[in-house]
Image (cartoon, rainbow, N blue to C red; front, top):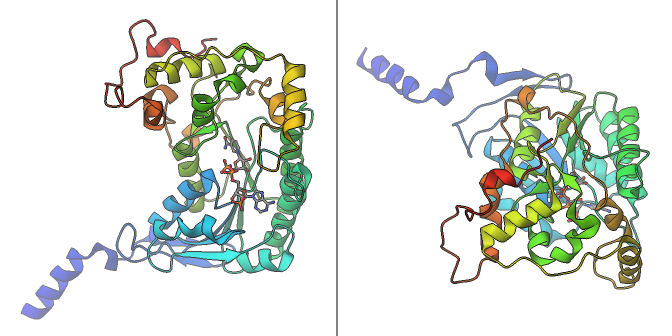
Length: 366
Ligand SMILES: NC(=O)c1ccc[n+]([C@@H]2O[C@H](COP(=O)([O-])OP(=O)(O)OC[C@H]3O[C@@H](n4cnc5c(N)ncnc54)[C@H](OP(=O)(O)O)[C@@H]3O)[C@@H](O)[C@H]2O)c1
């Protein structure tokens, strides 16, 4: 009697041993049963493949998936680029696999056991081996086709861009839109996610503005964008793993629209650095310089990126509410990412913006 009383107390103390209806998800391909303690040592029962895992967004998505107990297949091209991801999950939860975007067998191997596949592959600039077409269109189509043929994969999430449009003057945005079409054709139930420009520790937005302000003065800094926190986009993608049925398209712009100039003002005020005196370069000159810079072998501002600096983000309402996410305001979190650009004397100073420019005055009001 005493023993059974003790045993029942033990069962009550270990909630992980209890089973509830929400522990079972029945996917078209297989039933998924979650078990184990909450957190890092949990087992969600899901297996996810994240193509483009080694990029900026990839690390945050993988950390969120692995923290919830999902086993994550991490395709990599360069082993060192995936090394930092191993520690984001418990032992055995992160499985790096070598792949090439043109190798069907390797892609098939990467998705063999997964029930959800994320495609985060994208490139801001073209290289000798991979132009926009081969990465955003052909590559996306091949991955979607292989996922559609795979018996285990029931969900496919493709990350595109807020400004993807077949009519865009930018080849990057055009190929992103063409890629979406190919993906929808190959995997009709695919979810297309369209984030705005993302910021975070490793971004190419705030860091680049702080280091190269001259490159953001194109168009007199008047181009308007809706920057979004990379954490919020990763959270949205991670939520999709558990939601069924998945939405068809998700637009994820940041909550507020800013001009480049207002973001640079924000950075200057937060870093206590003097405003840049760099001149505004006319577009034809910027295009000429960008074309000349293509002769070097390291990535530089490409002519297509110059074109994009003149294109404001499309104004669409974000689908945040349906996901239960309240996206962060840039002004509230930017200090975390730009403090490193303060001088040693100013490093520990308080965060409040200087009185002559209140935080609220940075954003563009319509
Ligand atoms: N960053 C933004 O502000 C932003 C905004 C909206 C949408 N997006 C889209 O969101 C996705 C993720 O963005 P991100 O900022 O994380 O991009 P990122 O840091 O540039 O990472 C891109 C990823 O794609 C992989 N990749 C690129 N070309 C490849 C190729 N030819 N073969 C195989 N893998 C290749 C890279 O692998 P390697 O490490 O091996 O190069 C890397 O893992 C992209 O599709 C991007 O277009 C980004």
